[in-house]
Amino acid sequence: MGQTAILEPVAPPTSLHLVEEINHRVVNEYSEAIASLSLAANRAGSDIAKEALARAADRLRDHAESHRALLPPSSEAGANLADYIGRICNTFSQSTLAERGVLLALDAADIDLPADRCWRIGLVVAELIRNAARHGLRDRSGRIAVHVTEYAGRLMCLVRDTGQPRANSTPGRGQRLIRSLVADLGGSVEWSFAPDGASALVQLPLPSVARLIEPVMPLDTMVMGEKL
Image (tube, rainbow, N blue to C red; front, side, top):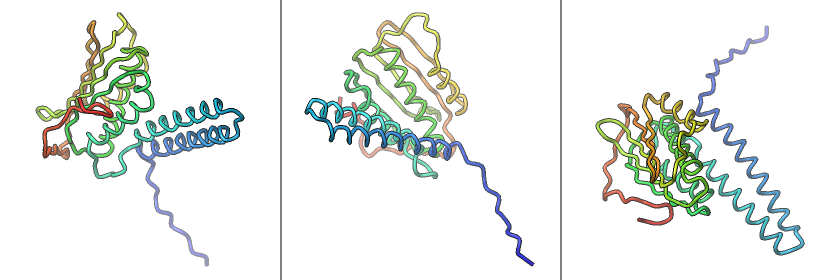
């Protein structure tokens, strides 16, 4: 008689695995587009066309890096929140903000968190930065400051901009996404608007496994690419 194979049950994919797969596909699409532009640049007949196509390929590379920075941390055990948000800020500044004259500053405490929680907080910060750039500054130059710290057992994340928010603006998809992510994390978010800019304050409970790392030297307030 033949033997019957016993199949082990397969665990359903987690949200982290699904996001990794989606990001992998998107980054591959970026790579194909960049390769096509590079090939077109090599075949272009004029130097002006070559330069324009090469610049477009470089821009796509920057956007691909920005997208890759939003991948969940590679270590499932845990990740340093300051390092993870720092990569997001650096790549987003390079791909989108710098050419618009927007200065992005980051001041973040070193806190070790589970990878899944670190990733979700990174998504919240990234969307807050996008909202500040898109709605607060509205394609103008200015400044966005991100502050992440621990206070009384809670994670405090403040994102401020120097823009001019529209009066009586209706919350859009970005705000709804932020509220949903923050609610999943068991926290709260509050927006404040003033003539000289807007701010968003996110408060989240820190899990018992979170670990605040005491820095060897005082944390510097960093601007992407230079110190204040």
